Length: 137
Ligand code: ZN
Ligand code: MN
Image 1 (cartoon, helix red, strand yellow):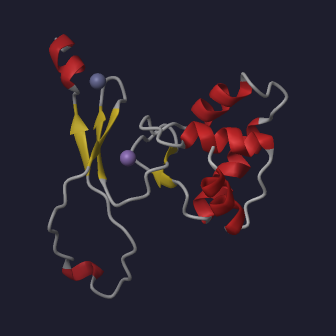
Image 2: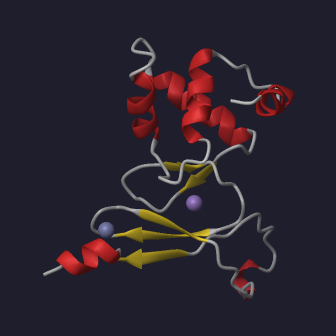
């Protein structure tokens, strides 16, 4: 990881342990929208003594600092996205693949929400990816 990135994380007040650095490196540019379990499995190879709680706590810190975003589209698990720019997602109902959707949509705030403070919104497209569409019977 380059110095600039390291200093940026430090400036946010994140304590950078070797395990945390490994988690940050794993997430950098990761397009898989991994779950905490996925991250744990990947990092455990390098840090066999690391506990799942370490991954979980790190993710909570990264969430609170806005370095990762939580993606609530997979009912079975929390997924995390290091791309915190506003974007939408497609999820395949068969293989669970998630595709980023970077298109901008004009939406109108409905009457029910006019008194709320909206921080973010996300469109989710459900269906079958290219590969699963072919093998569907
Ligand atoms: Zn699929
Ligand atoms: Mn994404």
